[in-house]
Amino acid sequence: MTAVFVMGYVTLARLLEMIIARRNTGALMANGAREHAPEHYPAIIAFHVAWLAALWILAPGRALVPLWLIVFALLQPLRVWVMAALGARWTSRILIVPGETLVTDGPFRLLRHPNYAIVVAEVATLPLAFGLWTVALVGTLVNAVLLIIRIRAEDAALAPLRHPARR
Image (cartoon, rainbow, N blue to C red; front, side, top):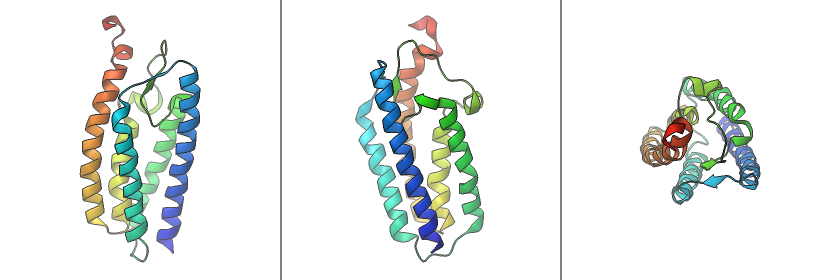
């Protein structure tokens, strides 16, 4: 029952995030945003759906490892902090609105890509909370490959904002 509660929370949270992302994407595009490197986006969505599905299939009935669940729970306010720092700019796509400046407050003072750091930790810790070491390992490796592609694309898109003189 605990697994169903935890997985239900995670699923609802991710669905809510996708609704927010879609709303923000529409508003950003209406304001002239340009999407960068959309070709890898379907793979990211497919990965997250597969990761969540694997957990729904494998986690129910397994004993909970409280330490990893606590770590996962501690990541959730950090996720909200990132979303709050980006505000209406938060989306699951790489969108740049001409004339906008780079977000450098909140968690972005500490890390260049705080959301990805949180996702890395979540992809590992949630499966570990159910003792699913294989899901944590495979998920982390696949996520790493996708994030290498994603971060390179995002850094390229944000380069003009980081180095305005190079425009």
